[in-house]
Image 1 (cartoon, rainbow, N blue to C red):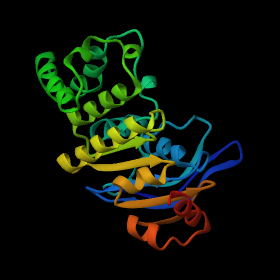
Image 2 (image 1 turned 90 degrees about the vertical axis):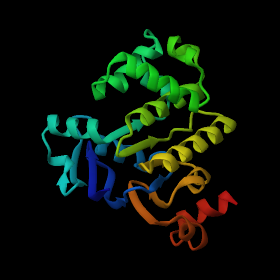
Image 3 (image 1 turned 120 degrees about the horizontal axis):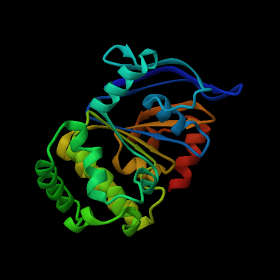
Amino acid sequence: MFNIENLTVRIQEKNLVHNISFAVPKGQITAVIGESGSGKSTTVSAILGILPPQANTTGAVLWEGSNMLEMANEEKARLRAKHFFTIFQDASNSFSPSQKMKHQLFALTALRLGHKKALFLATMTSILKDLNLPESVLNCYPFELSGGMLQRCMLACALYIQPDVLIADEPTSALDMLHQQDFMKLLKNYHTQLGTTILLITHDLGVAASIADTIVVMKNGEVVEKGPVANIFQQPKHPYTKRLVANHF
């Protein structure tokens, strides 16, 4: 689907990501796992074009043969708006506290696709029901909903838009264990239903193992190991991966 090739991100003389390469195959779930500071979220920011202005980025994020890092800002924005959707770590930061959910969900979905309000309401109401959310959510403010409900609202947006690539950046880290499990089940159902390519960013090997086809292990800004889930668990090669697997069991 798209490839990261020799990506390096440097800010203030420090390499946050150093010469990493991995593929995100079409129709599969690729999990990037690593501790805080490993470079996972910096990699996502590079893909999305939201790095700070002082960042120096080299390498490539290849989409259909074109390097997204070399595109003009407007072209990058159009490409990402058309093909990508991102669920971030804390959904409460994705919504304004001063607007009801129906207005914000409309802006994230129907407005992006050019749909009218009537179609939006009919479609979104059905999607929310499938995600075990009541229609009344639309008339709530974000602060009236739990973290788990807000994350499901973000997933509802993905179901509405049906992007080519869904990026989920630590989507469960702000949730308790029960809501983590619920959200991962919904995400897996989403993938089964639509076959969307998913890039999952997580520090939790158990979360990655429960859903991913391939795991990419990062440490200190570098990719130290990558491969199918079964290989990572049964035959880990790097000492850091071995520790992750040992701690999981």
